[in-house]
Image (cartoon, rainbow, N blue to C red):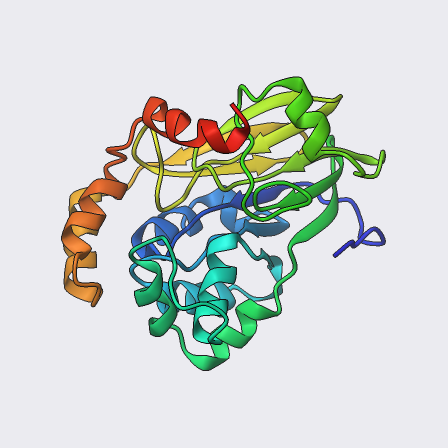
Length: 256
């Protein structure tokens, strides 16, 4: 989806990979600069986690200032509910798929895969989940130049900034003359705890919002019906997977 006619935006908050973690999302939405942003862009993987329905409801309650993009995990939930697949590799995903209401499944099914907006200081910004051409392929902070040439092929020359998610690790780098931004993950961070997000315009400001993780784990254990929620919440909210672990796991999918 392209919205080239819209006036240039001054500030855009980017939230990626929320993964159904309501306490982390609430912490980020309470940030004054998120509340004051012209738009909030969600770069996918919004729902595959312990409280998917609650996360969708809270975000939809924010109104039209929130712009949505589908991630591979959101797509997989829709496919699972529609009978297009019988399994999902992520153990919590089948639970999340069944926890969503039919109207929420329909809403997720209609989400675009990309979105382009003009942002002050950054030009035309393309938002996607993984790469502009695919919702699950991997690019990393140290991906080789030829890999970036491959995944950015065919992108319009007017797009000067690309914002992606998927790998749950924040970074900013140049590739093929374009600025590449990954805000990290709100709900399932790798490397260090906290709810990670990004503020765009006129520069690029990677942010992390601290919140009470022990209290959030207690709350998720109480409120989510996922059978292994205590272990899941402890592992992901405490970011027990290091950045090194994640890079090693993702490396083969980056073509290494």
